Amino acid sequence: MVIPPEQLTREVLIGIVESYITREGTDYGEHELDLDSKVKRLLPQVLKGEVLIVYDEESQSVNLVPKDDASIV
Image (cartoon, rainbow, N blue to C red; front, side):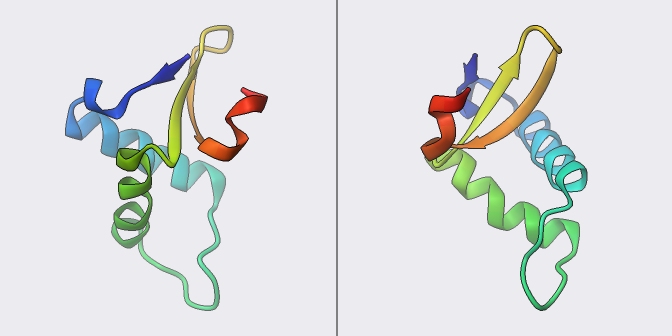
């Protein structure tokens, strides 16, 4: 199930983004960025709908998925 970001509080939304970043060990190239910088890069993509918030009922977990990959969800 896709959860629209506007249905979440800002605190919850940022918590989901932070959880994803720390869980996935995202790579931002030659220079490592701190968590706040990574959130500032990813959050606008979520708000624009380029990255979807997906809730999996079976595992009761939330994940972020690029919109282009949403067909695999």
